[in-house]
Every structure is written in C-alpha cells, then in structure tokens.
Length: 319
Image (cartoon, rainbow, N blue to C red):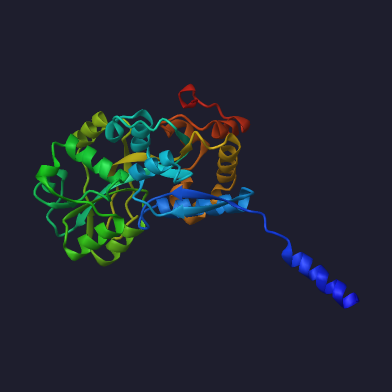
C-alpha cells in the first residue's frame, strides 16, 4: 500500500502541466549582419527575464520587410533603419500611400555604418568609379538597399549607370571574393562578420565619400549622420574612414499591450550587458541614445519605463 501511494505521488508530480509560454517573434535580418545576433540576444533576455513569453529571432530581408511584418502581425518586434522606420510610420518614401501608422519605437539600439567595400586591386577608389560596375546594393527589401539608392541618387548615379545586384551580406562578400561583383554596400553595425571574413582572405578597400557627397546625401536624408569607421576594425584597413551612419530602431506595434512593451523595455535596459556580450554594437544601446535618435513615437509602455527611471521623454516621442 505504501509503495502504491509513492508511485501515485510520483505520477501526480509528473502529470503537473507546464505553464504555457506565449511566443514572440523578433524580425531581424540576414545571418551575416548584426540584426540577427542582436535579435537573438534580445530573445534570450526576454526568455530569461519576462515571465510567460518565449521569444525567437527570425531571419528576414531586414528593414523594409520587417515593417510589413509588424503591420501584418507576423512579427511582434522588429529592427529597422531609422529612415525606413520613419518612412513606414509616416507613409513617405518607399511607403508612399501605405502608411503603417501603428509602428512604435521601443529603443534605438546602435548606429549602422554604411560601408562601401571593394577589393584593393579593383581600381575603384571613389563613388564616381562605380559607373559601369557590378554593384551589390543589398538584399531586396533591406535598409541597405534603401541607403545605397539614397547615396547613389544624391551623387547623381542611377541604377541605369550600374549593374545592380540585390544580394544579402554573406552573398555580397562571396561575390566580391569570387570576382562576380566589383563593389558591395553594407548598412550595418561595425565590425560585421561578413566583412571580417572577407578581409581575412582578401585585401579590401572601404570607399570614402567626399565632403560634397556626404552633404548631398544628408540633404536628401536628414537622418544620415557623418561618422567615423575606426581603423583597425577590419584586417588591412589601418586608417579611419569617414562614412555615413543611420540609427537602428527596435519597434513594435501600437497593438502590443502597454504592460508587455514595458516589460520588454525594462528587461533589455536592465540586462544590457547580456546584449553587449553578444555584439559590441549594443554598447550604444542607452536610454540617452534612444531619446535622441528614435525617429517615431515611442510605445506608451516604453515611455512608462523611461519616465519611471527619471528620464524626460521629448514631446515628439509621445504618440
């Protein structure tokens, strides 16, 4: 009888149901960029610190596609370039006539650097040299493609002037190494794995924009910021290179509950060291950067967290 009771007790323990976890999808980018590892790190933070939720980072075509995934409810969180996020939320640029007003900011994560890469023996030393060349402008639907077109157009170079190819980061690096293209655009945090790997097997050059080209690009897209790609980040690139930068923004839908948006924001900022351990770009992920760089209204749940810790949220960031 005692043995029976013991077995029954064990059976009761085994049969105790697990608490259901609500899945959350984080739309990122390709595996050769920074969005995917940052998204994976954020998923781990949510899984460990936000009760009742199980987050997964999803490989996507990046910024433009990600805004659509938020709008359709196929992603709960997404990362996108600030210019793309702003265009989506305001119905301008690529989103003319299809405004995704529901886009809300959670945080600005870090600044992308627009890196224009060629092999050192290509003979290409300036943006003007791209005419007639095979150029990867980024994956279809990516922020890289948006930025590449903006920079080229501002410099008076249209797609008719180049042989454009729409390749993701890893494909662009492989195509450069194999001689299938001449130049590739990356709009991504630095350093990024695909360029790091390319530079270990090939001598590369990063094309620097002239002051006039930078001014023209900024006139076309005010969110562009002049910044410096530090020498030494990539093998063979010893000197600093002047490039354009664009913030990256973590967004959600206005349909997300305030409590969930608050919990995600709090978990991320209170465990930011976990994200920094995944990728050094997360060193830029601060409340100050968020309040200065986010181009769209913040989610009320995120605002609650920022105000709770004593930050002053600018009026422009209130929905």
